[in-house]
Image 1 (tube, rainbow over the protein chains, first blue to last red):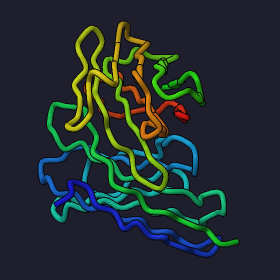
Image 2: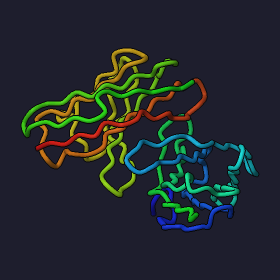
Image 3: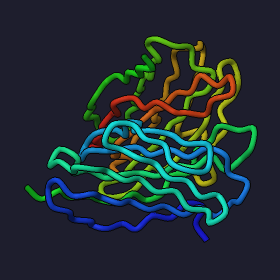
Length: 112
Length: 116
């Protein structure tokens, strides 16, 4: 079983809609969860991180964490064509270490 | 803040030669730096983790004698691909973390290596 799993997509949403990206992880002891965005040919850029159960909002982005279900998601409101990218979920599985385990990413396309 | 640079951004070299890639944290001290490799349409693959002043920890399957990592200071880590071959052609990305209770990694822009 992979440590971090994401649906590879592609996920297509119309402009202005809400895009929902999902991620599950295997280690119940995981503490830190990150969402990165990667444009084609570029390196990942941090969107946001979340440590506690519940929702965390930053502009049009909302991260949702449910540790009981081992599930973390990213919602993008009012999706724009510029949001079209691959979204990587990353989880710190090892307590006390700072290695991140990355999912394979979900390709999002926002259709104008 | 938390800016990481890499140099060069792209490099083309002949098979058998060595290539050095630099990763610098510009506005913070990075206690830990990471080196990743990414092939087209694939996810990031962690190659090694390095802490300043210590030997790098390599992931399984990564040859430490082929991919030499030096983390001589809190702001600089280098990756040297020795005796490069066409199969080493890839996108190499470093990231840095300042530790101190945070495990957030900030990525450099990446180096695209093409070995002819």
